[in-house]
Length: 281
Picture 1: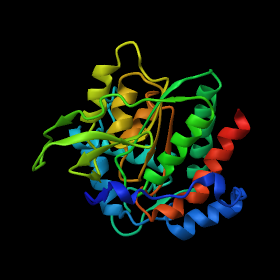
Picture 2: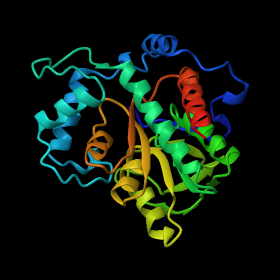
Picture 3: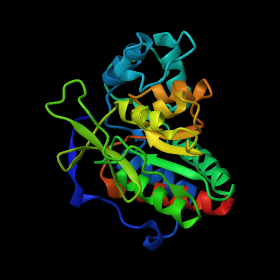
């Protein structure tokens, strides 16, 4: 998606504790389709296939910090994405509409919730939350950060203020936290990024204080999973790396969804996830 920014004062998303109760599964499924979080998504078939070829060619921009062990040819990636995300399996379908299976989205959200609950049950776990999609998924990550705090988890703020020059940047960007969620900041605006470098900087600083869990997306999740940290993440149908990481056992759960719809549209999915965690505790 486009490299959009969000000013610090514009963080989206209501507190799910004050929202409506969780939807029944069928209603949630309908909501995902209606808002195009799943079902017929905005990401085109051409874009999906281009990214699958890029991962097969080991383009670093599409690996998200992961180093796949398997061969992962273009056909392998397409087959995995059909199985894990529900995109069209037919290799002859090369343009036009593509899909995400809403049932796979819900199943993966529940698997993510079970993983988060398992970590929270251990006592006072260290949890790191990060997103490369502040214009969409920030609202989900903020809710999860609140959930971690409410259940005794300790949110980490490792490498806050660390800065670097990245490819294509006109100036330095740095790690900044908002209510426990790490993002990449560009002069007061949180920006979209796939880059694993910020998480790799965190990993270099962890020492013996590694997180017990990382909740993230894009390169934040990929680099954490590659480092052997228990990681759950969200990924669009054109971002196959985390699904490959899950297939290789480096990512515990990857939720397929359009990662840049209007933030309020994620509220029912967020409530479902929060309720799943709460029931498992």
